Amino acid sequence: MHVVNVILAGGASRRFGEPKASHVYQGKPLYEHVKEQLLEGQTVIISHPSLLPFFKARGEQNVWLDDEEVRGCGPLAGMYTAMKKQEAEWYLVTACDMPFIRKRTAEIILSYCTEHTDAVIPLVHGRLQPLFALYHRRCLPFVHACLKENQLAIQDLLRKLQVRIVSEEELNVTSNEFCNINKRSDLPENGMI
Image (cartoon, rainbow, N blue to C red):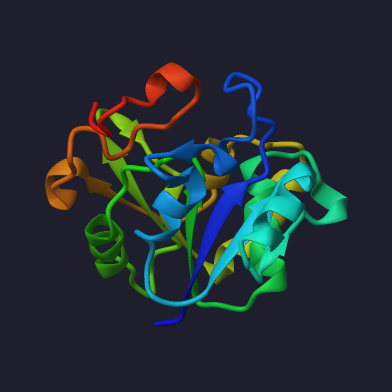
């Protein structure tokens, strides 16, 4: 099964006050905490324009801006760009601001991928987690349709797909694993929430 990891780092990080992907936490940028926990294989980064020099300076090879046609349209634009530019069967799509995710969780999510499933989405703390989830390549036309129709919420996309929801019990998640870092106070000093 050919999987490409996609780190979404194209947001403006307004609440955080600086680009989250490059914020150093416990000795390394947030995006590196995420990257270390992804599946084996290639990783692509969908970047905010201001972060291109940062990623290049860190030796990242596959860093792209959102496709011009959909630039500024949020996570769906990043998914569309990755799927359009990089051939794969499955895409592990993740936000750059989830430094506590674990490779083991990604591997369990991958185990639920089947030929009849378009997306595998965790359900944690009563909420779907579409930004640490797997999407099949056949989602690309649905992502594109959502973008063309200005339906930019990932929930709009999920309504069009065959989705396998995986519970936190099935994933055996840690208490803080799916915490998004939206403001500096979300980052505890010792790495635990």
